[in-house]
Length: 441
Image 1 (cartoon, rainbow, N blue to C red):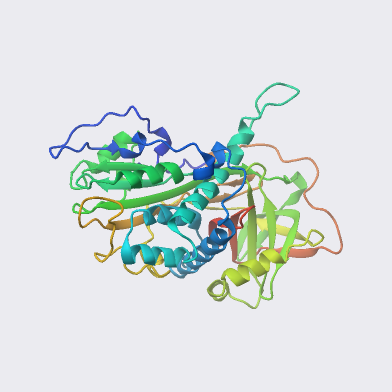
Image 2 (cartoon, one colour):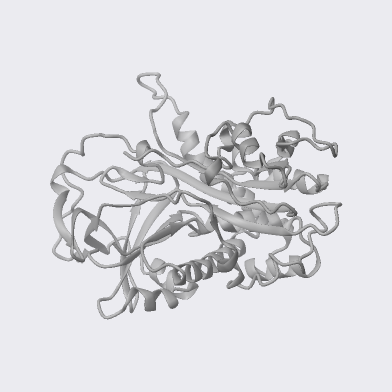
């Protein structure tokens, strides 16, 4: 198994509030974790945090889901246009990070962000809906792991998890507003860290702060910059319906020998594509695989893959319609360095967000604050007979299930994923894509 590549900036789970920092000459602390000084409001009626008991989403949630879905699919199409081969990224992580940034924007910059995410939403809608969406996804598998078996009295054993790891890196000459930091604590929970961008030891300080040793992989910091956003998503889960030993066979994906996994899955389709839906065991996610028809090239199909096509596929779901599918096992390795999302986001309509024309007057008292960049840490993707993961060493080496995941029925559609296809992990409740990619071999 490959060792997980972890960025120095994203080991947020290792941060504790007891970290010490050295004082700099201007009075600010190097490596100061600003977010550790703010606590989330535990009133679920205000924050809609699932952990705090928010059983129902905000009233604007359906509107939020539809608009965020549209933004993410546009992001997906633009991301695909820049990549010739297989790729994977988290459009949901990007949308959450942009939603947080919206809290610091003013004037035309705020209008531009809201136009990209959805003009029918207010910043308040964006915050409460983002809080519910993020906290629910992170909490469901977490709650499962804390359950106690009624017979044995032991806690359930599960390796399933989902975690959004977001960070804001702030230059130490920037005086951040309390209202922004409190909004972050209440709705997003990103790690906000202030340090000296111009210091030669900035990367090393981050390594020390986050208890890591990946300085070479740190996001580039402009010495005269103000603010950098990073996002990352990691998850792990087994299949709800496990594969059996007889469900594996050798086959060809293009000209490559590949192990295919056979199962009977829910069938979806449109005029130009077919696909299946598979469910994970503990996380509230479904894996959707979409393969264009033989006469349609994957690049041409992606250009038309908008909200209408996406919902046409999902709406074709019928409990009586199944496919006997053969899906290849594959892995897309994690990228070693953070990936800039600026160009892709600019093509979605965020033309001035990263320019000197931007206005972040709600983020800081300091003048001239700009967003230097938004970066994504790509954790890779593994689709295997065991389950689905961003972290290869988290999938257990376990024996396959007894029996078979194939339900023999002559009426089932036969579907072999032996040519390029789209894969997406989607939230069961909202249908918002969480993780998206293309497998090209």
